[in-house]
Image 1 (tube, rainbow, N blue to C red):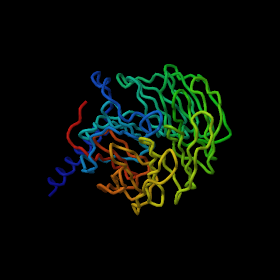
Image 2: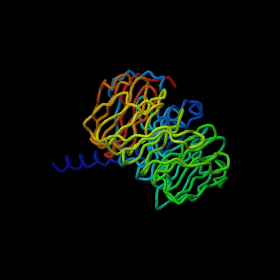
Image 3: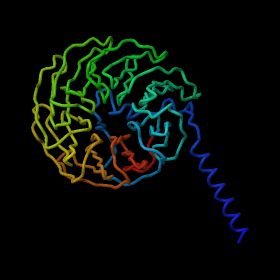
Image 4: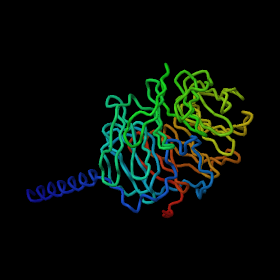
Length: 385
């Protein structure tokens, strides 16, 4: 009996060491990975924050491809870059997973919870951390060397890399552009508002939403203010930019505004608060409301095309993948909804509430929950790299 107990303890020790070694594996980008595609580079997929991949192989079938567990909660948005799913967690690590298999590729210490999400340009990763650390970091993923770090107070969700500038916003009302090589400030614009979501960009103009419903129109080259548009309450998700600038607030108001002079084209009110960002595809706006409805709205007129009641609370922004809208709920349900008529094509379950928007590579849908579950659904064959 004593021998058996010793043997069991020995095996448990070996298992613990193996698990620790696996979890502590340090990520290093291979030279061959530099040229791999990054289909979901930013928090809302592209610089215009449309959250839409309209040309995709995703069929609408939410087959579970893989699932894994993290030992923390997500601290910022997921992204799909260089063939990897990148997860930022509350235990001060960035974790990298192979998109096809879910294989854990390693992690990097993030300095604190990476609140902004991660943007990769060439082999350099950029991110900003939450209070109380309040830092921006630039790290070379090839050799794991830190290029710089700088103070940035309470970074908003979502960074942009554009025209050799790192663009973002902070909780204390600042919109900024940093030199990506040095981390020094190129320009900044200070406002009296607070920002929880970062800017969207179209044709060298930034569109920054605020906690009092304002949208600041700023020139991306120097931060000069053009004009402001306005909804009634706090805008907590990024605005989507297409023919117009589209925004939703926490009272359920939706607005479309001219891209250059801030004129209101139309506004309307939905049946409940909107906490997540809208998705925009082919001039149709898709919105998830906390009441459980997903709406499709004509971007030109603001008129309904359809709505679907999922019967679940929706906090995260919806996304568009091919012919489908993807919505995730606070009870861990994932829905694929036909863009044509709002019918539910398929659904899946994952353990834990989904507060961060799903992301996609066009083949699969990736989602993370507050219980530390990370999963991929959709086309499970290995995608092209």
